[in-house]
Image (cartoon, rainbow, N blue to C red; front, side, top):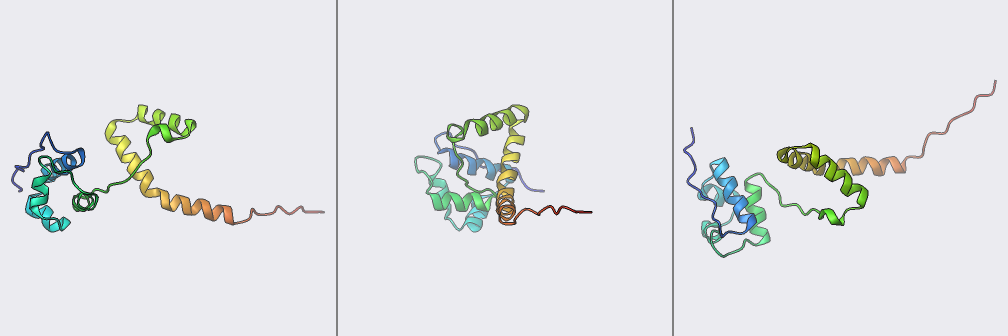
Length: 133
């Protein structure tokens, strides 16, 4: 049985650093575990606790070691009005954890779905043959 984590989430840390510390606490990951898994020195993580903001490569490494990925997403106001309405409607029906899970699943499925859509566009539709009797 793992001991409870002593990691705390500092108030002054950047939002992404807070996520790392919260996940470390939730998963019971120590600084040494994260250093080994992410390939980033412990001193770097400890510097994030105050004014130092994580760089892109180090935050991606830390999140990756914790089972997360840093993924850019468009703001809702950048979506077409009909897409925004669909996203907002879905968000209204789901709990916050389901929204996140659904978004992650949709993102994970996107490459395969996009490949299927491209393949469908490349295959000519079947011609219907008229039978003359």
